[in-house]
Length: 258
Ligand code: ADP
Ligand code: MG
Image (cartoon, rainbow, N blue to C red):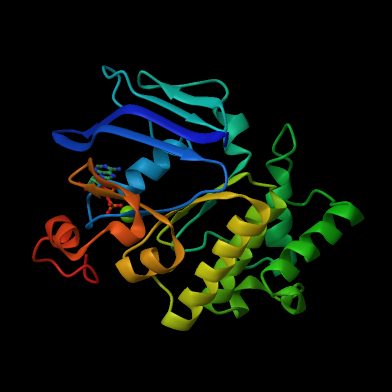
């Protein structure tokens, strides 16, 4: 049986009077690629952030989050083991979150830092074998020829691929990507989604990716979890998410503007 890599139970989150997540339940098994859909403000980013211990659920609730079998948070409190799961979780942001003044290679090497017990300074010397690993990760995303260039000289799509290489360097067992293609043109979006799918299929890394566009979700992700006003509205095969459900999910709002 496939191993469960994400388990979310009764997750509730309020921001003041705004009930942003309502009794969310989510279970993801190893090797899955899941699209997280829903209109703007439906709670997608908040849910992802809970999975990486960047946000904690309501204190009064019975919420529980476990990633890679490691407790992340329980009853509104972070678990001591959150660092352990975070170190094995690659997090990819819409705005890449790279250190643009550093080289591409250095940015990938940063992925190795979270595997060490303490956070070493960025000036730490990396071993030859780590540099080889970083180059291999860059090759994986098709950017080895840019290794010594500054990140700031790359296009958005290329920068997102560096972020993916960093997650590979981290030896992440799971990748959480929050709107990774929202700032990219269609061609770069396709390349980034194909790389995520290849990593998912070849390395068996579970991927949870929030997306604006339903068509990308359907093309690349076998499973969709859709949130509506903080509640799980749909959880199932992407091909079975029909036009009626989509209309109910997005209302009159165009999915592209959401
Ligand atoms: P999505 O990613 O689906 O667009 P979010 O998870 O960003 O939605 O937001 C869900 C709801 O929570 C929204 O109503 C948003 O305004 C609110 N929210 C998110 N983060 C914060 C925050 N740090 N402080 C206050 N409200 C927040
Ligand atoms: Mg969001």
